[in-house]
Length: 283
Ligand SMILES: NC(=O)c1ccc[n+]([C@@H]2O[C@H](COP(=O)([O-])OP(=O)(O)OC[C@H]3O[C@@H](n4cnc5c(N)ncnc54)[C@H](O)[C@@H]3O)[C@@H](O)[C@H]2O)c1
Image (cartoon, rainbow, N blue to C red; front, top):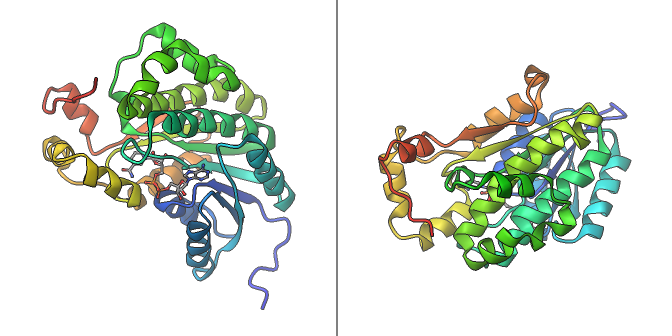
């Protein structure tokens, strides 16, 4: 049976078949082709089935965000499926899931690379969304380091003195640096590569959102997350659906004047930290 007779459907590309990414494409993918890439074939299969049995058109491809050739093949395949209206990047690893080097490679360098590559493939008037994190607000960086993180060519990012001497020493610092870099790379791309294509790009920085990734954090981090929740104004965790609602807005034409920004969606955790209600323990 043919569910959709429309040809030339626009494409929604999702890198990272995780919980938040799936919630986002459910909101923006009706009537379009959803093209999902992930390194984990089991995740791809499960997410594709979940979407397929909910009436969406879905294509998948195994892709390793860490590998430039794999990412290029992913972007090329996406563009063969149709014009790319949205690119959403949720591929990431959290501090308690990985060593510092892997976090720098995936959350920082591979994300920067995805921003570069999809600037070439996004359709005019399209929109991008990178999922960063509230942790991007948990350290102060000097102006010099911020400029370097924003503008250093992607292939040279790993060689930065700050990355080599600080971020590579500690998974927490690596994660914070990578997530701050996401904001800065997106801000720069919005004004340059993406802007040149008349495409918009923004980041969302989620707070504590209950997903499998977050469970790995809770299991490893002792009572620090409980304290963070208790001292936050909303006094609870968030859901992927709450991120997806904001993502839908930022991707849509309702946000047509918004580009190069980060939207922090954290139930007020950063506000409570800045107000001295919760003390961070970052070295
Ligand atoms: N869950 C939270 O509380 C939270 C909070 C803030 C930010 N984030 C960020 O949100 C993003 C999505 O997180 P989530 O909670 O939905 O996680 P998730 O684990 O459900 O999804 C991440 C996906 O990325 C995929 N992936 C990992 N390495 C890859 C690679 N090399 N190539 C391609 N795909 C790869 C994984 O297989 C997984 O499907 C991550 O960047 C994470 O750092 C999560």
